[in-house]
Image (cartoon, rainbow, N blue to C red; front, side, top):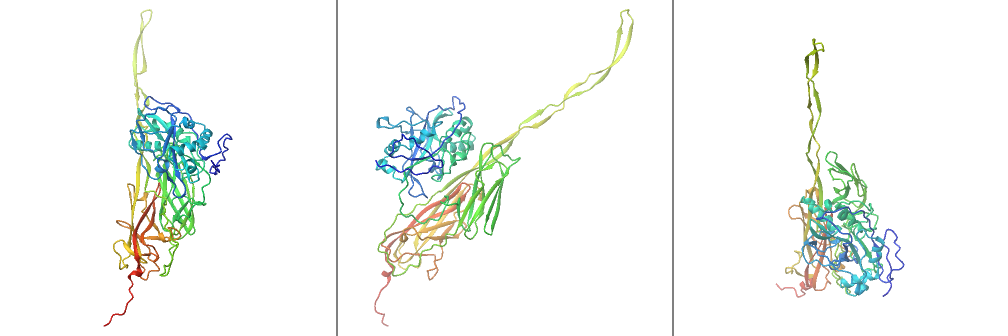
Length: 621
């Protein structure tokens, strides 16, 4: 097999062992940490070594939209593994894009390295040697095993051709509440949040060292990849659910430099950080939400809540937003945000954040404000030709149709304690005593005696504490695109028309959420690309026509239309058959990020507008 060139994705230079095979060698982006395991009980425990790895193959040919290839596979060395419950295998990428936990109670499938086929057993993953883990998953043998088990057409040569990478997630198999479970670090964090919201015993309360320390710290990225940020925090200690979901329990392996890619549509920047010095791109004159994570080493309660300030500064533009009354239990975190409207013209803005309590995941965001209404298609001409036209596949931009976030709140738990204060209450009395002497004579004497008593004059004090709870919020985006012939098309029949006439696009997005309106925005932007331009180069920015009720966006008025209608003219040379328009809906913001959705709809081209012209003699009176 031809040697593969190693691509450099590591933030820290990794010197691979000289004894590794020099075939499908991969480049790892994975580090690890951990600590002691603590103790367990007969109902909640983990046995060292009962671990594994979930392997997913990710197609990276479209960097803006990495997507899964097939279903993830779970690998382990454990020979006898019977689980009572587990989650339907999904990757960290799936969960980030809105997939929910789906509990299964039977049919658990794992793969074990087959030594008879030359596979090497997995190294220990949890509390394992990170160098050994790197060497294993970047080896030619591991690549061949994975390509075989995933039934990759072309085998290891396809897997390592630069179009794919491995996403690795450590798995722990353990007993929780007397039942055998298996889950990744991301699944453990999501499950713990669900248990906490329902006041059930949480994983963190009984298996802290496993599910919230050693499992998530078994793998993390040294350099941002697949839209997940690198982890630069401490490699020991208990981590909160949000940190785990955002940073931990993930590694990647990349094979070779990707080949030169076919041109892709010129997609306006979206929620993903662009390959530049900017952390975020926003659109002009748009409601957006900028969020950051507030971490609390010590308890932040209503007696002294946190206030986070966002200062947004651009060219002749300045805004200040505060989020106050934030409470977070010790050792946990809370997403905090500012909802603001971007300036009406393109510029760069700097967003700085500060807090009076806890610490922020970042204190600065460099954002770019872009105007998308400046790349409309040219004026179509009656004699236009495109003899070399070929229809390209429709693009698939970043899509995220659901989001979930939590907000802490606290309630005082009274615990009254009596504080004793014992006081002596004096009661002096006079005592007369008769003294008899030895010679029989007597005398009388008097003395005062305090016949008092102790009295508790204490008081009650409330030695209570703050109980913390979470409100769970979700948001979902749905949308529909309807492409129809323009009303000025005289011979249209339903969704059938001749080329050269115009089409309209009516996009109806809807955002549903159980959160206050201050937590989210509507879907405010829609952009359409067209097949005659191979879904690139030119696009039309849609305009909001209706805000209330069912929101609606349509094409902006066409400068080249004599009646300035909201139409896009199909080229007269367009061949008969489907004419499908691709639309990307975006800018539905939540504290957990932006929601977006890919849409498509079309009409059928039959003939052209020239078919509606008739040449003949003038009528005779």
